Image (cartoon, rainbow, N blue to C red; front, side):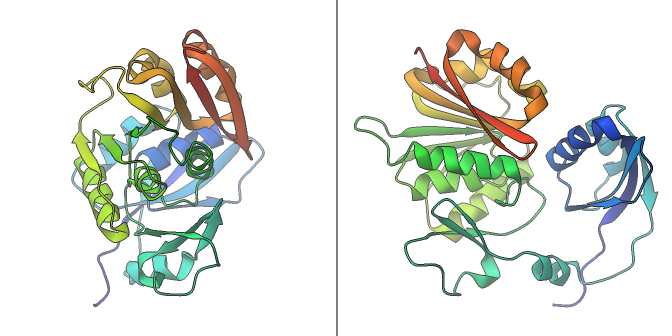
Length: 282
C-alpha cells in the first residue's frame, strides 16, 4: 500500500487550567493524536490531528465549545498508517493483553486475555486512562454472577469495552453510539476478536429497554454523564452496577452528586482521570 492521504492538523491554544478538559474534548471529537508543545505558564498549546472530512473546522470549533481556538496547519505527506503502527505497541491492562491487529499473532504473556485493536478515529484503544479504568471495572464485575448476562456500553466509541465484556463472558452485550463511524469501528473490533455485539445507532435519550441491564458502562464526558444521569441509570436493573468514566478527578464531586440518588458509590483514579461505580438501589 502506498502513502496515505495526510490528516488535517490544528494548533490549539487553551488556558493551562483547561488543558485536561481540552484533551478529553479532543479525544471525544475523534483526534488521531495529540502533541503538547512547549508553552508559557498561562497556556497549553497542542497540535491535534484529525481525519480530513467536510466541515472538520466547524466540528472542531463545536467540540471545543469556546475553550480554545483551532488554527489549521500544513501537514507533510507521509505514510500515516506506518506512522501509527510504529507508535502503537502492545500494553497490559489487568488480565488483558491489548495488541494492534497487525501484531495479533505475536506471543502474548501466559494467562493473558488477547484483545485486538485497530487504531482509528473512534475513541478507545486501551491506551487512555479512562479506557483502562473501565476495562478494570468490567473485569472486576466478571464473570457475570448467576442470573446476570446483559451489559450495555453507552457511547461505545471503538467498541473496545463492549468487546472486552464479551470476551469476559457477558452473553448479551449492547453497544450504543450516536456516531455511525463508531458503530462501524465497533463492528470491526467485534469481527477482529470473534465476538458478537448488538450494535445500536442512537443517543443516550433513545429507547433502550429500561431496567433490563446488569451492568451499564458509560465512558463519555462529565457534562454528558451529569445531564443524562437519569437516562443512564434507567437502563439498569435494581442491584445492577453503573461504570461511569470519561471524567477528571476534579469532576468527581459533580458526577457523584448527579448519581447520589441511584445507589452506593465508589471511585477509582488513574493519574488525573477517574471512574465511579454505582450499585443501583443499594
